[in-house]
Structure formats: structure tokens, C-alpha cells
Image (cartoon, rainbow, N blue to C red; front, side):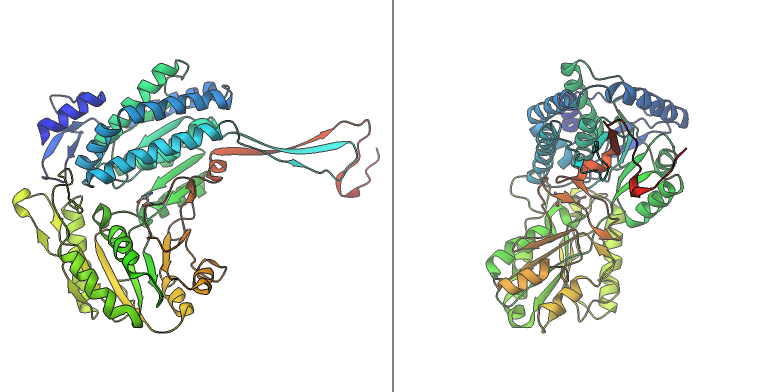
Length: 503
Ligand code: UN1
């Protein structure tokens, strides 16, 4: 595994050091649990100097017209297309997601580059009618400044790209602190960026910087007043700390903090669709997406038809090496994730749940590799463990017997508010679910699962999910500074609100 990974890294343009420093991160693969190699971390001074370079880069970059900035992002998309197979495989090796999902993640990067290129000729402002004669008002959007991107292990490169592609066309420089669990994919992505920058020829030095390190580095950067925007993806605990630190210095934070996502299975649901949608959403990425389906709210009238069928499907899931053909469930990221899963299952049993699956399997693949049988847990109600997000393939199944209003209340009864879905062929139920009184999540789907969003829509959610929106729609506005400009083309000076002020 190690040898193949080093070859793949070399193909992507990353050379690994032969010797390790005591401060290095050790990159690992969850496929076997083995170490791949050391990755240098940034010292306090190095990080400080890198931010200074990022400020300089921003000053130069913002002068380039946005469509020219878009050209760099277009080239980044081209380079990503050329490296899709290799980077997809590296994502699979380092994050443990199946190859299809690794490739899908790189496709998501390509898609956001395409989106951002188009955006680079837009970034529209408004003109506004003035109440004063011979006056005109307009709204303009300007580059904001160096943008800090903190990403998580589960989407080690796509989340960077949603932020990077938009930030770059908006005229910002970028600094990236990837997860300590996925340093290699970050190095490979940076190498790809550098190839695009070289072809572009006009990217200032320091336009995109990667700083590897742990919590201390994260804290240093989040508290650095030179970042007017911090975009952070990860746990609610981390996001709360980032949000508070940013609020203290009046910086913007864009937070994307996981979810406890539910799907409602109404009486008229097409159960064939539900089977595939629920399974993909619940066990894809081994339950380690922020959009993972964690709660299934099944109407009593279809419960006995659906739940045994799901258990049957779960019983036959191909679990194994994520790079092997046909695997649908890869390993958990590490031991901590496995232990958190077991704790949640114990709590679920104590709270009246019946657990099917959940045990560790394939221990022969490595003492430090954590493969699990995804779990279905039938619960009598949404007890505390159900209301808590555990980053593992646990699907809690609950019965409801009232109308869709009851199911919506259950959907909304958790602290997170990222994604949600209803499966129904009843138009009134579907409309109610997406209405003002419906799902309180940032994503509310009808007849598709909770995960696998396209980049064209704004991505993010409410409540403990943090409120940020990344990716499509008008998410770009977070990366820019808005100004309102009022022009007087007359030869008198009328004041707004009719105020008289004669001197
Ligand atoms: C995440 O898990 O942090 O909607 C992002 C999805 C993917 C992105 C997930 N497009 O599942």
C-alpha cells in the first residue's frame, strides 16, 4: 500500500521526504492502518510569514480583472480533469472512501471550477433608484482579502475547492489548513494548483498556500486579524470556537458543521427508490459525510415492508478495501471513530434500541484498520443518542403514525439543520415538507436521499450546522466586500430624508 501510494504521489507531483522530523504529521491510510510517510508541519513563524505572503498576493491578485482570474480557475479545472483518476485514488487511499466516491469528489472540484469560471464574468451588483434628483445608486462587489480555509478529513479536497474556486475568482488569496488526517491529498491538490498557476503565468507568489498542522496552528490562524473570512468545515465544537474567535475580531465566519439528517418515508413512498437512496445516504463514505442519513422516520403503514428489506440489503453490503472493485463500504477513518460508534450503539441499546450490525469486521486487513458492518438501530423514540451526531454508519429507524406534520416535527427536533428528505408521492406532503412550516434544514429534498448534493445549489445548513452557505447560488457574496455607491451628477446637493441643512 505504502509503495503504491508513494508512486501515486510522485505521479501527482508530490515527493515525500525520506526522513521524519519530530514535529511531522504521519500520513496514514485507513485501508490497512499503516503509515505512508511524514508530512512537515508549519511552525508559528512559518505560518505567520505565509500569511504575510498571502496578504501581498491578495494586493496583487485583486487588481487582475475577474474574468482573468477566472482563467486561472479554468486551468485548475483542466489540471483536475487530467489528474482525476490519480487524485480520486489518493482520496480513496487517504480518506478510505470507495473509489467511485473518490472520483466523485474530484468531479465535484471540476464542477465548482466550471461554475466559478462562469461566475468570474458575473459577480453582479445592483443599480438602485435614488430618492434624490440627478442621483444614482449602485452596489458593487470587491475582493475581500486573504481567505482561510479549514477542511475536514471526509471531503479532504472538494471542500477546499468550493472555497478556493469562489475565493479566487472573487479576488482573494487563500490559505488552507487541511485536516491532520488527510495531509497528502492537500499536498497533491496544491501541486495541481501550482501546475495551473504556472500555465497561467500571472498568479502572484503565495496566492494559494497550504499550512499543515494541528489545533494550535488552527487557533493561530483563526485569531489572525489578517483573515477577514474564515471558512471552516468540521465538528460543531470546532465551529463554535471558530465562530466565537471570528466574532471577537468582527471577521466573517462561514461554518459548515455536520448534520443529523433525517428522511421521512410517507405511506405513498416508492419503496424501491427508498431502498437505494437510504442505503447510499446512510452507508456511503462509511457514514462519514456531514450529509449522511442518520435518522429514518418511517410511517407505520410501510414499516414492516421497508425495515426488514433494508436489513436484508445491509446484510449483503460488500465491505472491504475501498480501492477494490465492487466494494460499497470502506473503513472508518480511525480507531477513535470506531470507538465513538461503539459508544453510540451501547447508548442506543441502553435507551431501548435494537441493534442489527455495527460490529467490527475484516480485522485481518490490519490491526489499525477499522471496518464495520453498518448498523440499523430500531428505536422506540428519538432518545438522546438519536439526537446526537455520531460520525459513523448508524441508521436510527423510528416509526411515526400521524400525518406529515408529526414527521416534520420529528425531523426538526434535533440541534443540527443540514439536510433532510421526504419520500412521498403525495403532492401536499411534499409541498408541506419544503414550505415555511416544513423542514428547517438548509437542504430539503423530495424523493432523493440526504447526501450527494450538486455544486450548483448553496450548500450548508441552520442551527448547529453553523448557518454558512458554500458552493453554488449566491454563496460567492460571502467572499466579497459589498459597497453602496451614491453618485450626484447634478449641481445641487439635496439631502436624503428631505433634511434641510443650510450653511
Ligand atoms: C461533507 O460531508 O462535508 O452533499 C460534504 C454531499 C457532498 C458534500 C458533502 N456533495 O454529500
